[in-house]
Length: 270
Image 1: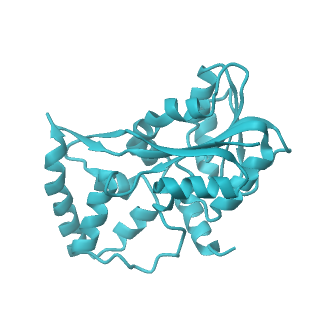
Image 2: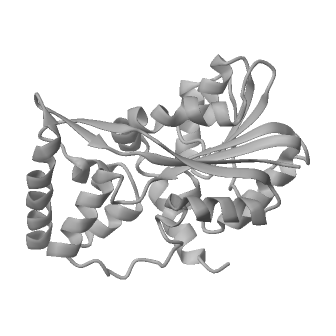
């Protein structure tokens, strides 16, 4: 596999950020759930698979619509936490590229902010197609580009201005590859799906000062967190100050309201 080292780096990282991911990103990433579940046509009786489930919030939302839900994630720590939160959901430790289910087992496959972490996203889509029945639906969300997802943009700009973007991290797939709607449609179509489309969904990151997006990305993720931790102490101080200056435009009564839209891509298995 081309990104073996990256895959190991990501897996190790996600074993250690479960509580902080939930604290910083839990209320943000669920904002796209209604649109994602609508794209999947999830309702009473739907058999849904939640891939890269994290704490299991998407599966929980599907059950609230009357569906049955199964969930997988490659992080044993995340799955252990998810099982405590949702004992009614069937969870499995598994990679998106190797799903432990038979052919045509599900009506819908949802991937909420997982595609950007997969070393082999095309393989993950092939597996999704395999476990879907005919006329089943797939949908995934990813972050919009950094010019739209402002929390990412301001931190990455600050690193570019005051730090060192190349710190020798394991090479991985482009983080914002699927922020492009045309790329989403292309990869879904090449995986054999039909009626592929991609649309932007609004989301807002609510943070309470003095915390900023830098804190969220430093403690609640893996790839950008490693990039920040690799900076020198002096560079990190300048990066932090740059972000604090930029967030002032998004401050409302002591709270930050940061635009963080996502791209929602969906398609149907013929």
